[in-house]
Length: 272
Image (cartoon, rainbow, N blue to C red; front, top):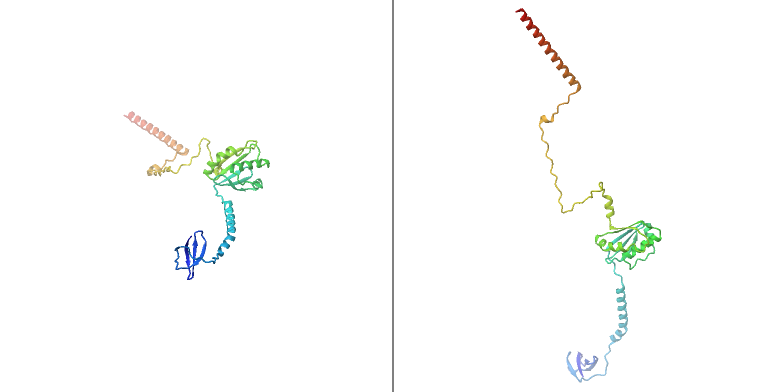
């Protein structure tokens, strides 16, 4: 059997056999790393206390590793908020959903909303199932009756596009009656109430950012002459009467003057 020299001392050497056993042998000027055959083995066994410690601690360490691995696999991952879905009947509640639509938090926004979700288990349920079950609970608690309005508001457009149609198709299932369901983006109803439409035929349009506003040129000042600013006063009744009086006197004087000249000419002709 061949042996590999692992260590040397003045009187002995430590060898490793082909089976992996460490043995003592007489040192015949061996060098570490040297391969030897038929060494003079000593009967002394090498004490390896670390093997005993390892034999005791290895199962414990292995069990501890299994426990850590198990709990790491089972440890819940904090969900990432994708959207808030507001459900308004008379009670108001808000659902916090992740990217897959799973509800990980449910909150009542008023007293009736807190009553509606009291003792309700929403774990591992998506937004459609939670909405459907809350509407059924609202019906059982007399919060919701036939013909009443139900509003669902979603706080971002991407979630509205993804969840809106699904909610519209399935949210009111199993109610047993019809309700008026509105599904809009959060804040859209408030914006609609702020817009005042005076003419039903005209719909207010907000210009897009690409459209440049039309500039209004300032009007040039009107050029007027000094005489044009002066307006002749309108004639009053007194001025009209005075004008008529003067005209009448003028005509009378003219008539008397002509008559006097005629008489003078007649007398002169008679004298001749």
